[in-house]
Image (cartoon, rainbow, N blue to C red; front, side, top):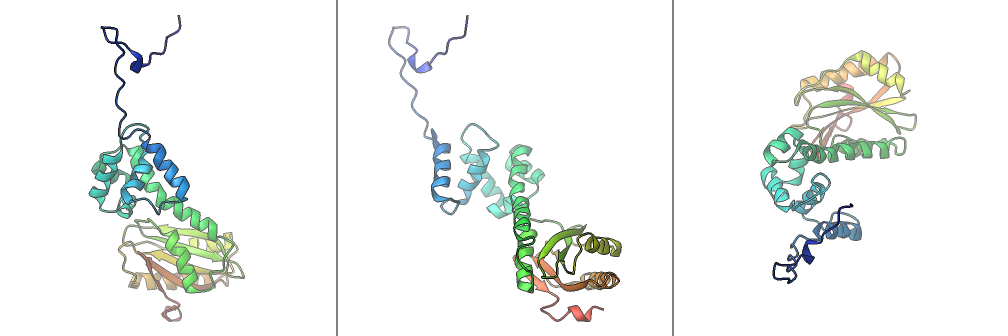
Amino acid sequence: MQDEYIDENTLKEPSGRKKAPKPASIHSGHRERVREKYLKTGGLDAFADHEIIEFILYYCIPNGDVNPIAHRLLKEFGSLHNLMDASPQEISRRGGISMKGAILFTLFPVVYSRYESAKWSGKKALDTSRKAAAYLLSLFAGERNERMYLLCLDTQQKLIHAALLSTGTVDETTVYPRLVVAAALKYNASSVIVAHNHPSGNIIPSKGDISSTTTIINALATINVNVLDHIIIGGKDYYSFSEKKLLGMVY
């Protein structure tokens, strides 16, 4: 015999009267309304930060009211930016959510970085420090540790590939001349731009930054590849060796 579906709202009381229907939750249909709002507006401009967090939580918490969790996360981290910049372990611990949900929040900055990198590749010439910095600001978005890249350019100074040279701690990285030359040869670079980030936000080059620039210039000179610039990214700002007339002083 097959199981029969029973609608609780049609159950009868012992007296024979129908059981009163349960009152609709104030959150009934809320998720669908949020999705419709997103589709109607075509973005998130009409959303408050806690609503964006709530929207994201729908995709890792399939049922229930996530509004209190969204407010808790925003209060705990202070801003949407701080939340997405935190590590999955920290989000899970401080926010009281699963590791699956915590990982989801940290994916957004790195996916955006990959998206921007692909969008720029081979399409726009990075023929000024300002254009190169605009690309690098997206490349380093959400990065918590120091990384160094070699932007390999073609003869028209269009981006061929952003080659990761090294990943360091929050305050240092190491450059190996052999890897620099190998990257330039692999992507057939006609010229390059060196770039790294300062997670602290301080864009002033250190003695180590100047020394690494010298190392890279000397290494690439052996294969006749010109270094056009070394750009340091810190927060939403940048420092260009070329703009500061420092590039020719590091030999």
